Length: 386
Image 1: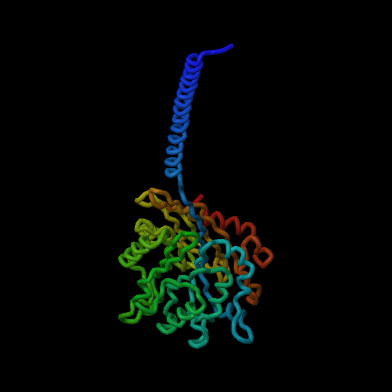
Image 2: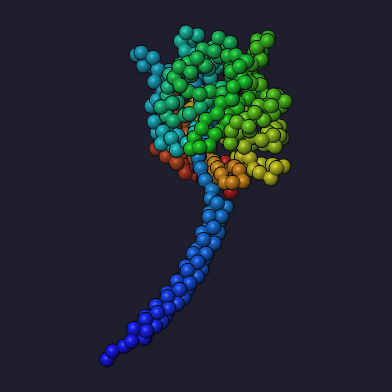
């Protein structure tokens, strides 16, 4: 069969038109479908990014701890004597695991560490072997408070010699100072991304006057000065910790003056108060602040290592509190939680072998009724924070 040229040409043109139309329709449909498919994920992606930005939060955590008085009587340092000096490290050996639990641990160094140059001495005018400081570092202590009623037992020379040694061994200290500029320098420790400022004050120095014109030597309780330092600490750190040497000796409950001052300090911006001086344990409690936050106060941490015995003077412990730092697009928020306490006992069988041991284990170190004593102390310390 033969077709004319005109017929073949018209057929070819028609076929091409049909194919072109089909391709155009298909392309249009495909583009519309692609646009629709593309638009939906783009919108969802934008929402997801915004949601992620809103919900994104960085969280940092640290546990802060504190122990009580390191009060070195002659019966303690005599046991620590060696042929070449003193060794206090064995006295902390049984508590070392507990002491290394907090991320930052504070101790109250009640006696100066002036060493033999000034003359080792005991009550009432203490001067302790410098090896005490080495033992504290080895046990896990990160900073010591030095503002207390024994700060000037050996005068300005004893105070400065002690601080010089602490600097030499790399143990931070707060509360006593060699110069005005040192007093104005905040002691801030950064741990796990959380900055903690440590402050330290005492009610007095056992009647020993601070040398004229040298008020900077010892931080004495003064509400105006304390508030000024607290304000500087709040600007420089996430958490403000105050070591307070206050209260009445051998009293198991805080005085009204302690409670009133604790409330003032909390409302000024102190987050945690660790109390010292009574030589026995006093409870911890939360303080509700005017700004809606809470502060924790431990009114007294008792003796951690000393030559005092009986009537609760040989029971101390480690107070802890967890710090959580939340960071998001709105800023920084700090939360205190889970206050805890682990009681300890100073074993001194026949005053020949001083050892700090967990109170739970003290039955094996000469303490009768250790289990009931443990339960009593835990209730005494934590009843107001549960």
